[in-house]
Image 1 (cartoon, helix red, strand yellow):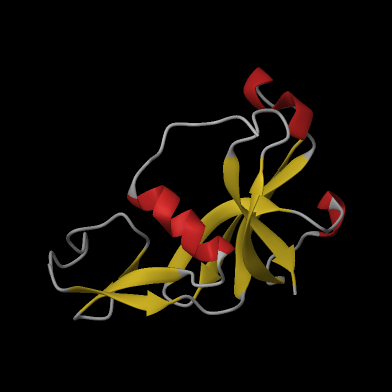
Image 2: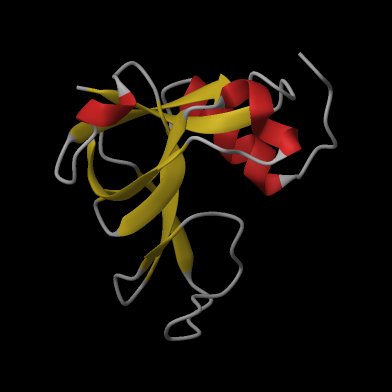
Length: 128
């Protein structure tokens, strides 16, 4: 694995997913956000609490990358998706399924993997 610069709270969030303790931040008005956050961007509430992420989410949007930039050439083809986990949307790569079989509404779990080209950690969705 290639070592990358630590990104503080984002890396801590990835660590929490790897240890099956994924979370999001929720303000007192019920708006959910992924870390890092200090203030709710929607209502500016500063009272944010850590809430467990649901065990599964649902793909809301996806695209298959077949002609990547050189930075990700060894990863192609790959599917990038946005999945809704309760009140938060998470962007990641879909793995464990043929790219042609990915569909909106698919139920997925959240994991952490590595990019083939760079070895950097990345959010990964796997079919449930």
